[in-house]
Length: 335
Image (cartoon, rainbow, N blue to C red):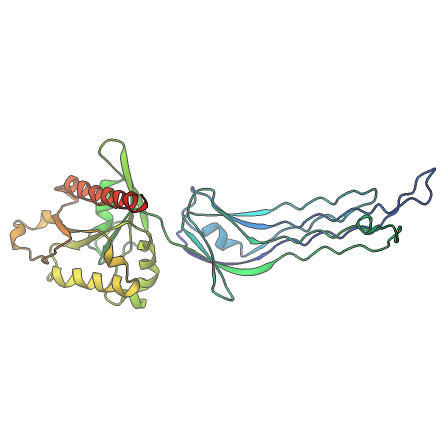
């Protein structure tokens, strides 16, 4: 399935049915009172989270969504039938904006979250509603109200516990493929990964967490270079960051701080999250003491090889500990 994380659609809710003007005519009541029924309500346009979706692909194919109008009222006080709602299913992590004002209307994250993005119009009153002691045979009724209509933008930001951050061809996809059941595209050239890949990593028996492989970043990514601005948004929801750098690189320290700088430019709070540095491809160099790494106070460094699986267990355990510390901090702060 093609990964699409943005879509623009036009939605139009249904109008309400018109109220009816009618009078009761029976064999022994040739001049009965007013009996016009109310019109039915128009259908709403509703956005609802479906956890089985992970892309906006289906929505991008259909740019217009329209609900039916309510049924008109009928004689003998029969109420018009309400129109059915139109439900548009979206993946978890979908942000909804009004296209004209750029106002964020909602952020749909959890299962069964929903939002009425366009309200259907109310049905009009039939003439039975207007009967009074003075006006016993009213010949008036309301028209149904029009439904809301708007153009909206949908933006998907993937939901993951851990975000992998690194330059192209640093070994992120290979690492994800080894520690999870994910099958990202892997090749020995830059920008093999062009969309985020999610994998479930199991550890300590039945425990697990979701890891996201973000497409490789380059210097200037926060300004949109190399589609960086489109990639960076997908790590905004992650709880911790794992920096992955090729151990055979000429200047590991420079690469690390370049990645940090791009994160800072994109979102000032990203660098405040717990992090881990993984130096990859340990299988192609013999002595890790010869690899110059940055002197980091709050970020642990682990040398790994996804090919020989050396130190992968240590890396996963350290990631799990960082996640648990985040959960414990959240629980403590809410007590």
